[in-house]
Length: 125
Image (cartoon, rainbow, N blue to C red):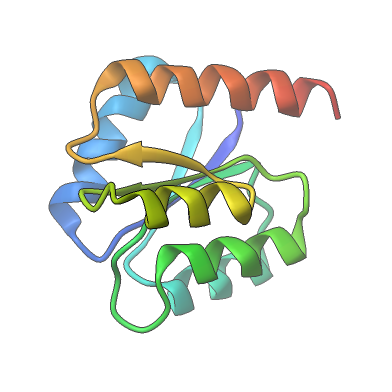
């Protein structure tokens, strides 16, 4: 089954890296991109997404605030927050809102683990 993935990062290069990993690991999935939280919420209001991959550090609302807002719309949505800032506080806050923390630069192994877990969670719904 192909899922719809929302990718949110203010860096086009970072979105391209996530896109490449997604295409490699799950070529049949649909990817929709947003450059910030406002764009992401506008897209989420128009269309349903199965999972989301969010940058932590963005102008305006950070990825953790966006994660909370997306989970308010769809509480069971698997979410990953990605960041080069892997301080304990950021990782802990990601887990507290119900998101998986992935460290930048994003590599294939943790991305695969997140996607495999997301597939299991989505199949159980």
